[in-house]
Length: 259
Image 1 (cartoon, one colour):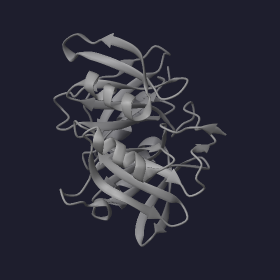
Image 2 (cartoon, helix red, strand yellow):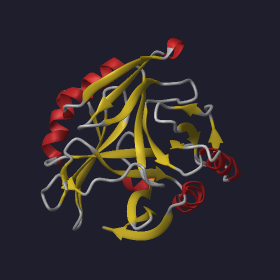
Image 3 (spheres, one colour):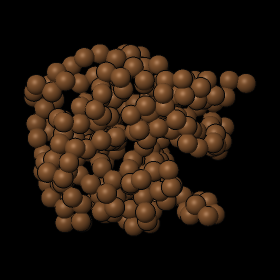
């Protein structure tokens, strides 16, 4: 077990068609999907092997006064959701889903950071911000996180003040601007980049690990999704690919070429 306060611990896809979305990710990533109902809200649970990795829920369940949330939302572990929401509000974040309870599971909320990207907060019913850590080397697990935003430096400053994240490295991407690698603990956890023209708003994207990146790219298209970026090699020899699913949600894949 590890103390993971301020780390990503869960992922949800908010969409208008949870069944079709589940089929897409099962066929593209290799998840298994199961049904769960919590407080009369229906979820599709995506599992990698025996481990639940993410959930899919109808946007109607998380509608707020400004309209339904949509797309992927990553949840950060905290010890007190209400206190963190109040602190983030002081840092100019906007509450998108007010703190609420999931019976027997924990308390959660969703906020929009100052540039509009949705981020979730989760506190376990046990009162502990610790768990067995995920293995980012395994198929279906989330291996990286990216924030696409208008001002990467300001975004990193916000998360540094809110959660103590650290800047690890800045990579000059030329016309695309700086790419800021950040750490939420001992190891790099993700990057913050200037939002590309293909993405209409600031958002977080999970990177799901696959065994064969080229085969997975073909599956994305075959299942009705779209690849909007070229394969990019990363320092450890893997390749990344940024995509839209069949409902238009942004996600990404990471893994090796088979040959």
